[in-house]
Amino acid sequence: MNAPKLNDKSEITISIVWLLQIISIVVVATWGYANISERIDVNAQETRSLRNNQNNYVFPDIRKLEEEVIALQKEVLILQTDLTYYKEDHQ
Image 1: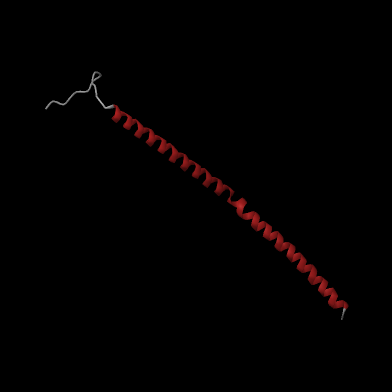
Image 2 (image 1 turned 30 degrees about the vertical axis):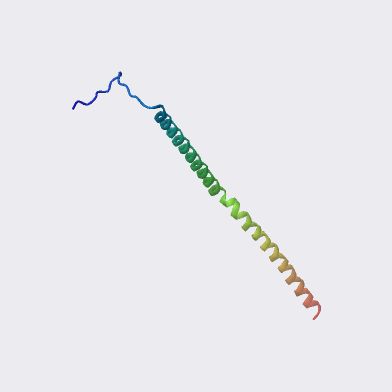
């Protein structure tokens, strides 16, 4: 059997319905790929942003708690001093 040879004068016949189906499949596949690729990029940027900003979310709470502990320690020291002087005055 002789295989058909392809050259610049080769022709192909295809139904319009098949052509439209092929074009629509290519369009849907391209749109889907672009959409998924965009979602992946957005998620990657969000992840980088969260990793870069995680110290800003965690440490201000810790710093605030440390400031409150220091303020309470000062109040305890003042109250202890007042108690000491009060006991000395009443003895």
